[in-house]
Amino acid sequence: MNLQAVEKIAKAVLYEGYMLYPYRPSSVKNQQRWNFGVLCPQSYCEAQNGGEASIMLTECLVEGSSLTGIEVRVRFLQLVARSVGELTTPVSELPGEVPEFRLVERLEANGRVYRPWQEAIERELVLPVYNVEALSHAQIHESFSFADEKQIEHLQSGNGELAGIIVRERKAIRGALEVMAERIEDGVFKVSVLVRNTTPFELAEDSSRDQALLSSMASTHTVIGVQDGRFVSQIAPHEHLREEAARCKNVGTWPVLVGEEGQRDTMLSAPIILYDYPQIAPESAGDLFDGTEIDEILSLRIMTLTDDEKLEMSQSDERARQMLKRTETMPMEHFMKLHGVMRSLRPLKEDRQ
Image (cartoon, rainbow, N blue to C red):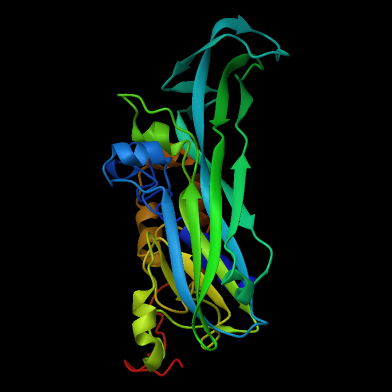
């Protein structure tokens, strides 16, 4: 598996839509986040009548033999609820236990404003290499889980007294991966990878999407590698495999070849539509959380934000703060590289076989 080639693309997919311009929690675009690759608990999905999904299925074709091996990695974001607490009684020293507090929508401490927010941590599941011939006789079922956790961060005022706390809490998540293969013809297999959210979720009449998201997997995507074999492009398959490629069922995802043009050892199955061999522009200085936009345009837009907007952006999320800092300190020569870049054009009909 060409992990080096897929890493940047997979990272961009992981944070696609994480926070959108104008990168402020108060903006309309950021009122409902986590819109790609979200796998919710099944009980919540059933209550939404198909509006949410609990599974993601990838099917693709592999040319190989009895020696061919299949590697599977699944990545997603687990959401962390960040709450802000104001102390109900003054505390002069950092306590050994959590002080009494009440949740608030805004807290100012030492010149900075803190607000509730949804952060995220990265999760990755790596399965052993399985023989494709063996997978055609016995399906692999792997369960996984991540425990719940609560962290407390103390906020101090300018004079060193405790001003409040930040509570970061994530709920337990359970899931399952199912991998199987089917021999289509001599030397050709269909490989299937199913990702399922099996987290218990007690559904109430007033259960909200934000509550369900804390038990969900966001930005879920699958990276599949092949050893001693080659993937068949889903977009431009061999002529004699075109019908079989069309029969591949992909639910909530779209598999494409990744790596250098012509390589066929790694497939990225992402919740957004991509072409084979997607690339991150070498001129890009960092992620802007929107792969459909142009770095130059978004960078210019960030520069036009007011001081108050930039302050809200920097105080809402650490990744947004780093993006703002990177944009404001970008050297002019680097910024100029974003403008007027011409890529070589490929013919409409290209033989990728």
